[in-house]
Image 1: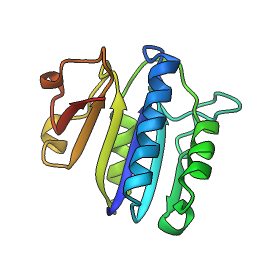
Image 2 (image 1 turned 135 degrees about the vertical axis):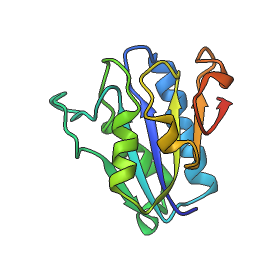
Image 3 (image 1 turned 90 degrees about the horizontal axis):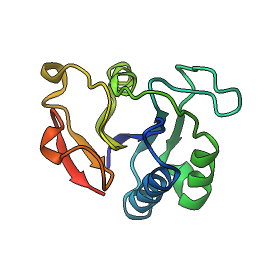
Length: 149
């Protein structure tokens, strides 16, 4: 895989069970495919520092391929960085992708209830929406391909 951004929705509408399932799916991706670089984004309406809860726009975990040879260690670091509990917006993730032009694929794990970025701007960008069991109807995602977790 090329550079990939994985967004896990940590908003208040996501249960701990759903967030755990998202982390498990991320581990499955890393067990199967090791991207050139992984940009891991835990986001509700913004990116948060796991310790203070403060909004930290640059508080994102980035791992190169050689750092992901042991996916269990990477996943543990990702879990420690999870923070959120507020509203939901996918806009910060897509703003991040726009600023990091080497990212070629976005995987968003979510219930889908949130603010989406401009459809016209992103409709042709490779995006997978991995929706939770009780999430938004798959045909309601405005662009990309949606699948049920």
